[in-house]
Length: 93
Ligand code: SF4
Ligand code: SF4
Image (cartoon, rainbow, N blue to C red; front, side, top):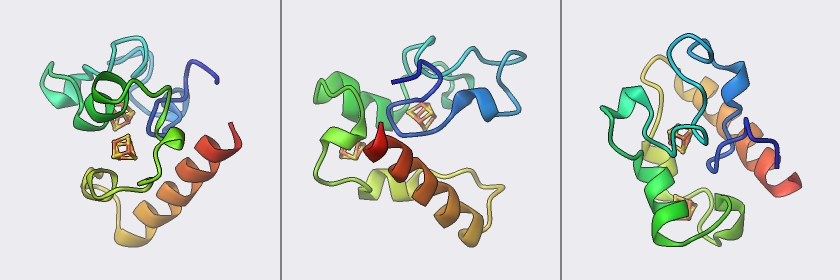
């Protein structure tokens, strides 16, 4: 998978933070600045706890953790649209 695609299906290269504030989730091993320097819970579950390449390997996708980890700036509609795109991206590789 493209290095810019995170284990949760986000495309880091399309994020407004990319390049300025962040080099991408994979580059920082999930310790993104907005997680306060700690490993993001999704990254921790997927990579550290389960040893998956991505959540595509998990039968729970999209799980409660993913459904509850959201950008507060997004409306419900925007979030569901983004989530659909992420799941599709993960499943199609
Ligand atoms: S939600 Fe977590 S796993 Fe997904 S891109 Fe952000 S830091 Fe990475
Ligand atoms: S439970 Fe599965 S889908 Fe959810 S974050 Fe963990 S690995 Fe990913």
